Image (cartoon, rainbow, N blue to C red; front, side, top):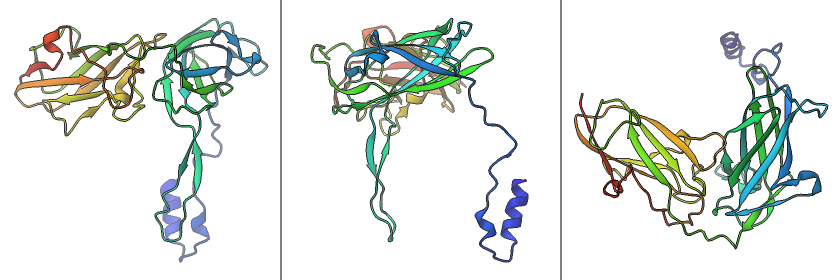
Length: 302
């Protein structure tokens, strides 16, 4: 159908009015909206009906909620996984005005992700925690939590934006050891100096008591790997990080490495915790010993 519409529009004796119509999928196909909704009941152990709570930078936020039908009844037989995504407050951007007849125009987006993870839903209820990064914008404004949940047959979605994000928790000292990294290739039995094939997989188990910065919040605060100390072509691994279920402190990076040439190579990985200030990386540990704190070496055979 799409090709037929394209051909018809291009062979219409230059009738520009016909070109205004576009095929947008099957009009008989229903959009697969989730059947149920996700509702927030508590923020930091305070019922949300008591008013908006404030999530300060460096603080840990606890969230409770439940899965409901659209009449507000809890689904006590819903057992599955919740995927929350927490956003900082709305930011204002400007268009580029890079056309001769255009001009700068302000627009708003709520697109700075502070946390995304996985939490267990048991008998229709869930609980999860996250750390608010030091690198948030300090002004105060409404944050947002977007939800998606599913069990074996059903799903639910929703959002919550009646809480405040901003400032910084003055009672918390942000100076702390950096994340712990266990670095492997192919599998967790890998030892420094082992042989691998030309196509392998980077595995990195990361843990930090204060959470791991996998959203890239803050200039240069990415999860980055360097192959053979090539700082010109770093491998940004943020999107390859999967947080452990029910634990914001740990997760795993899985990244395919392909086309290695025969010989000896080195691999180095750097990551940050959520307390790291701008411009100064947290200390890193590669593998399990001090000797491997700079680089984990491995061999490869064809």
